[in-house]
Length: 79
Image (tube, helix red, strand yellow):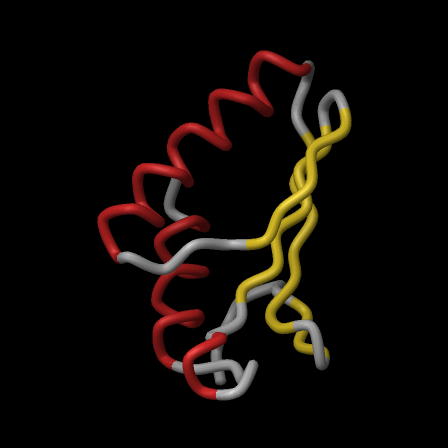
């Protein structure tokens, strides 16, 4: 699996993103939301000021990492 610097765990693929401020973090989350909605694959995420944490896992397959997660992680990395 090639997921750049995403970490794989039982919770799914995980990555932390840091930004200059809250506005940049929120803007990033808005872009991710559009990607997620378009692919009908929604992340679990957390935001605290300038930090966004994202977990990707496919619930339909019994909470496993699938090609949907890998594809979305690559799309997020391209933002």
